[in-house]
Image (tube, rainbow, N blue to C red):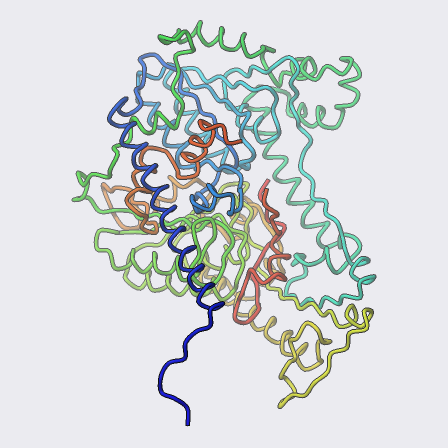
Length: 618
């Protein structure tokens, strides 16, 4: 008979249990220490210098860093401090850029705006268009906008082109090369490795896994992608030439003939940009400072009298949201930015459960009279997309209007969740559509066989073990996946037809995984209107018959410290970076979407993905 007394753990187990408890205590202690340092830093800043001050007659410096995004990605500050987290690129919130310029328009302390683009990693034509609209309104007040840079990449130059003047370093260059879509194709390598990839797709143009299936680009993908890139490039060149008052063909001539142009100028890229009217002056950094001082003057330390947009926002925003507008109905805005994944997800991805909960919250909130869903997503899990769509249908059942505003991209699963809206607004260059479904299953049986490894065993049914990647995909499971894929695609067509009030046959013509620009989508009935987020918010207020309203961003609740830092235009990542820099403490590998599916990052219960891997918006 076994003793009823609990067995004593051995010394080795007790040692590791104690070690694990110590590690847990250490992690919590370090987290508390980091929080305390952050809080002390904020308190010292507020108590000693107060909020940043805005000098009279100052230049507002708009200097975005990293990628401009609709929603900042969540970053664990402790993990970053200890070097254990992914060291993602810095990000700049599009909303912050827009708000800073919008405030400056009515702030007579701001004498001019300086666009400093050197740290901008990318934004996309749609997001830059949103900023451009605010800059245009600022210029209408009679004040000047100047862009400065050591050199300009294509995205940087599109932003710089919104200025009245562009000043570049004499050794700089304007990189205008157009858009391209090239990738490596691995079918030959997989054959040598004896890896079999079984892909199931619904939609001729659904090309997410072609780079693993083929040795070159398919004609369907070449046609669709080529047409999309030409459409977006045309929009880019039109915006540049119209703002710079250049001949319509100037940018194309520059990009196509850059070798001859540089030969004519002895390789001098700065002189070439100046000759073509792409920049207004070539100035070194000291000369730029002197030129700006001539306009706005100097501060007490002899520097250009200027304020950065982050400090400016900290000065003009209240540290905490006040309830002075609480009596007015709200138009809620929820951001769906990133890949659509199942379950709970942090900011930077769209979690099916996370977003559905926010939508339900808006539905239950009596103060929210209408909702705008701002989508910037290439899609992802079909199941998660459906969970979100069901929540949106629940919101509409309350009788409140639902409007979708598309950012740079709202395709595949991003369009799935847009379909139920009362109205859909998109930018002319928004990438949307891609109505199609795919799934994939890799089999390593042949590869293992080359190593002398054989897989064998027993099962109780024909389907048991049928999706083991160490075995060949059985005909039965192939049929199952094909049927599931076809069913999900048919359901996608029905969802779009129902939401857009179109016959399923017409939706089928527009589907097949084909990607459209916002302008093309509007012409085809997939989008109602062309416009930005402000237009969508106004439309939601109109549908709710609101004379006055307030805007409310509906987001996942954050800890008090995070809210405080956000109101001061600081983030744990940026604040820790400042501490590290002061202390003298001197890219994680990112899988693309198809590889993330194979690696298991997407876990759709039916293994069906409404995903557009080509939808990285230019």
